[in-house]
Length: 243
Image (cartoon, rainbow, N blue to C red):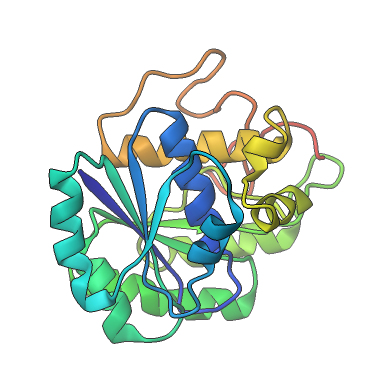
């Protein structure tokens, strides 16, 4: 079993939304998935109560019980535990970092988020956990070009010493429409831009957690199929037209 911790010391970065979308994507790829909600707001639990039918398990877990729940989940046949953390209490977030095989640090492309996630990256480094930055709520491209703020954010994140995922998420209403109904964007619009983003990001993260899966049709290591990748830095390749 693998454990993915979603981190950010800044509120409002979209940690819970990302955790839930990745959990649904993981389930769709055949991975039995548990979302461990250790955030005191328990937004992931609220989403699960809104949801009807099948979907990832979501449980409220006390931070001090996270390791025990992780061990139980492994015995239950869970393939992936995603830990949705709160924004500020370091002692609680530390428990998630200790359990993690990979720390996913989420940031929006702005000054305050970048400053805040530096602390999250430092916490993961203190426990020698692999770390990956993900840009969320990025503005759309105009005329085929990234907004300057995206490139600035990528360079600032890379300067913190951890890689930046080559697939980020744009500011799209589909993400919010989905979670408000107990769903995800890929369930609302299976062929929409948000669905392609999440699918490509999940494939990349899955490859970091496990042996890299074979590329999807039309996909290369630098160009996920259908994914509107960022073009803000050398690791970010030109993607689809702006939407």
